[in-house]
Image (cartoon, rainbow, N blue to C red; front, side, top):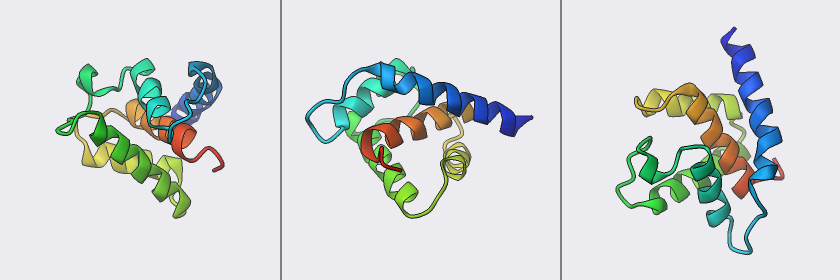
Length: 108
């Protein structure tokens, strides 16, 4: 049941993410931050600890993309995030991975 639920969440976000707004001309950072804010996952929404502010989330998003390029699946990355960040729920991790993939490595 959990796998079906996760597949539904990913599918919904795959449809919703392109509607979040056009990509900026920068490196994707603003797009990523805008996506996270629209999902309720920005630093000021108290889901993640952000000791360096938005730079913390940007670094994390870029790392997610590197992991995807390295052969990790979105599902395995979401699971790793949940295990390493006890305050993060599965649906939040799935959204975080989807936002990083959209902003930093859309070709995957």
